[in-house]
Picture 1: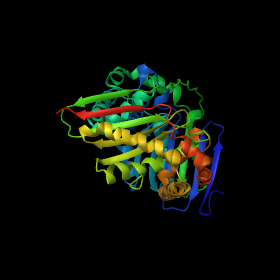
Picture 2 (picture 1 turned 180 degrees about the horizontal axis):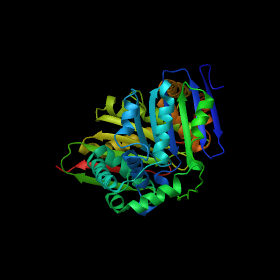
Picture 3 (picture 1 turned 90 degrees about the horizontal axis):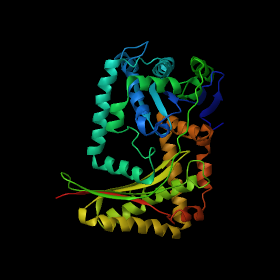
Picture 4 (picture 1 turned 135 degrees about the vertical axis):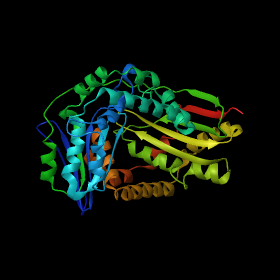
Length: 401
């Protein structure tokens, strides 16, 4: 029993669907049907196809017209959305608890019955091409995409959304073929967080037709590099320093979370205090940890003055190095901070569901409930050892004045 106010259930059904469910007392319920396939499984020629499919399933199914999909959810006061990551494509909604069956039916419908109508597909292709251009035009997004390019080799280092070239070349036939080869019940995770009975959750999960398809793994290769570029029309320099970190199933996984929190997590972090508060070199400074079963990397982003790029870079490296002298009191504070943030996130059922999915793809959703226990186990030397970088990548986008 994970807690006094909720219970957790996990089961693989005969139709191949993995069901994860947290029963909690709440007025709203979050439901998701997810496929264990994302951008990391795509080769160079089809990069962006998972994200394209995510968009296309909302353009109409055998049961619902394009406008009916959001309307049925929103007319009940709910929200509906989806996302594509490296390792999963998730279709989710959040509704008042009494409408659980509707939420389950719509999330399942998107996976089972998309039409991929030709004209709608071509319209959506244009939408995604504009989305890619938007990412490129936004300096912050641009440097964060670029750091991934430097940390990994192709195809993994390419954007989840794909490129203008790859998305333009994805034919309807190729998209349908990929969909049919991947979207099978054995690759589905049906997840629910809210106030409903376990037997009702299982009943909905059993409605997925039994099918089986195998997913081929695409190897991920690491590297490091440096990239500095000037751009007209911007007034601020944007820089990112990135480096590889322990993966989700590594014994230092939780030490990496503590490391990230101390370094750049919030206004009390070392980087915020040193670069912004003490020196006034930036408005925005933040770190981020991308951590999964098959990859993991840390990013540190700063927006600063053009002439201060190298100074800020050296300050980041200095603060990382100083973590070798981390004291027990700061480690204890960081642990309490992470555990407290997790408790706050639990207030939103969708955030809990996303974390459960993350852990499920990593191995077992039940690990979500061992978070406090595992963070508490992190030792001083576990965090200190991460300060010894074996290499790093660096990106800067500077104003061309």
